[in-house]
Length: 362
Image (cartoon, rainbow, N blue to C red; front, side, top):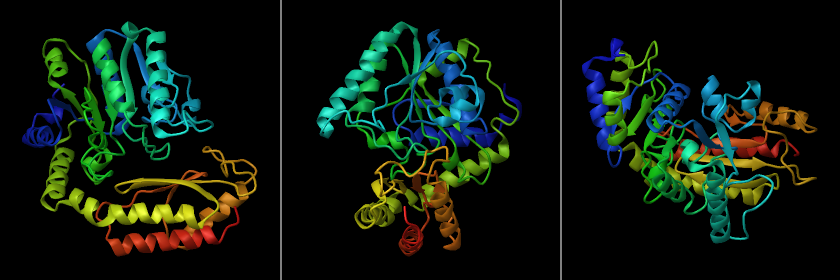
């Protein structure tokens, strides 16, 4: 469906993105949101392979529409009845146990469990493995060494489509243009993205696919369409934003100027506050876990509630009093400032966070 999208800005943006993405990720769709992009990616994988199953992680979020929410692993999937065909993988970043005593052991076991589950499901029934390169809403989870490479290897072996969701991590958030580029020898078959494409000035998302998949749909109808897909104004906005990022070397500035501060400040939270159990940071993408100092357990369920709900509410009020807008998930504090933040502004924000943490007895 061409619709409004048969315009020059579409060609300009597609050409620019094909230069930024590695390999032969040269075919593009432009929906309006991350959820729509993931819906399209799932349809692409199913129609390309003729298979139905989609494997995803428990600790994941892929969007609020019916199919994307069925692909989601976190508590929000409970708001609907799952659509058929979605299988959750044993997560490589478990909440309640460890795959091993060190990274090497954890990686080997997590990769072994992944292959075991694929074989158990039947590789010839699996259309895609859909993962976030670095899960965002789940807590900025860095996969064990070699895990994404194992997904790539399994997909190559069995003809499964590897889909990487870059809706949160894409366009510089991790200090690379795309999160999967932080991992060697990982070239997805399909990549979805949204937020950073237009810096959220206007609604626009994207689906990038490799040439062999694009070629398949030159003679096989995908049947994808959406009211505002490839809207010319949004496409022009996306092109302008990405060009500005390149002209101003925004990703390079993140790497050089603010990512080291982010890593140091997050590590200091763990050192200085007993209620902060663990912190993870990559680029300007960070998160820390809040625990009860009495029990050592998470201070609250991610969905809210629990015995410490009054303390959580007090902490939210303290954040507001400090003038700090935070993505706070009741037991996790995400730190994801604008990529244009200055070192001074970033340090000021951490000072406000520290004062808020000091004001509440978890």
